[in-house]
Amino acid sequence: MSDRADHFEGVDPSWYALLTGKLPLLRKGRRLFRIISPYLADRCRLCYAPFTGVAAPIARWMGRGPWQRNPHYCDQCEQYFRDHRGGTEIELAVIYADVRNSTQMTARLSPSQFGALMQRFYLTATKVFVAGDAAIDKMMGDGVIGICFPELAETDYRQRAVNCGIELLRATGHGSEADPWLSIGVSVHAGKAFVGSLGAEGGSYEFAALGETMNIGARLVSAAGPGEIVFSDAVWAQVGTEIATESRTLALKGVDQPFQVHVGHITPA
Image (cartoon, rainbow, N blue to C red; front, side):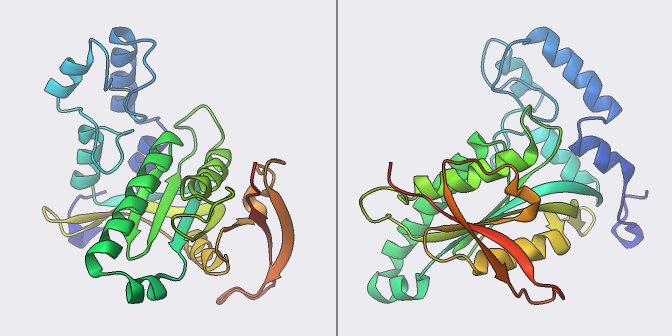
């Protein structure tokens, strides 16, 4: 596939190989970094460049320090996103989290106070997603989106997404005896989406995930009340007994058939 923006062809096999760890150059780099730092857990999830330990300075010298957007990936792997317009269709799991009652908060808080609260939310979500091996897709307005790709960690990508959603509720104070410091709703869904780099050649780009799976995830989070997490059937098998759930049937915009979901509430320990 040509890298020219005016010859964008969409699906590119090299993107699939990248996101599943099968790109030949990526595999060579993994073998090298396994040799120089065989037991290190804190490394790039794509190329295995070490971020800590005695080999970390070598990785940084090679331009493989942690990527700011998600420090479980390195700057050089992010450079691939910059240089290769295109993408792939891939199975993934997505976590949506939206702030509830943000209009009321902006009415009672000063702009700087509301900004500080949202900054705390973004930092909290980043910490939860990074710890759960989820890439941060977007931070926009009063919401965040995280994505879990298959085959880039030892645990199932759907399980990682479920864990991230539950942990984000806990991290914002839900499930405790006291009121949460920020009221949010969460959804977790899985399916096939287009993932890739979109934008003008040589200019700014957007690392994006697109398609029905993403749209359904967004509609599910809009159905989540304060402190609720909505699981689709696609991830329901990964939800354990630690969270109480109830089944609901939703009518989603753009979806012809009734949509079965499972709504969870974190109870105080």
